[in-house]
Image 1 (cartoon, rainbow, N blue to C red):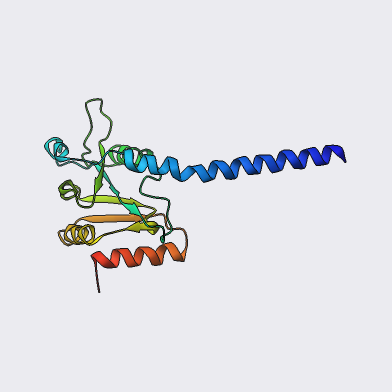
Image 2: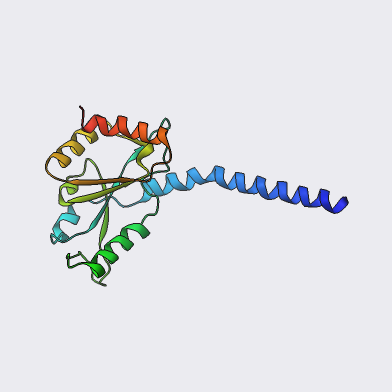
Length: 170
């Protein structure tokens, strides 16, 4: 019986550590959200017209339901570009070391218009202000392609529908 009580205490301690670590997670994500590179004018000077993975950086709303733009960053960006270059004849922009180029772009950045394809991951928590919504609308009406992916349930989808509705009203 003594061993069972000790095991329960250890198990409870491990659960508490896991919950505490999870509670610190948003701080780490907030740091990444602030620190991640966002393209600037210099990126356009290097753009060669080939495919490059463009990820949209967006703010999360506390009323939404999504982890943030940085989910799977930068692994997904690099992997999709690498596989595209291996499996198709589509030219892919690469850096000096031959690695596929990828950028993170804000919706208000003019560099958005050098991205025929943009990705938003876990946008169920995204928040667009009027300027961001207008810029996204202009981008889409000019033929830009938006891939929004990784919704976790109907609430996240409904929140997203409200945000994309700012850019594409009925």
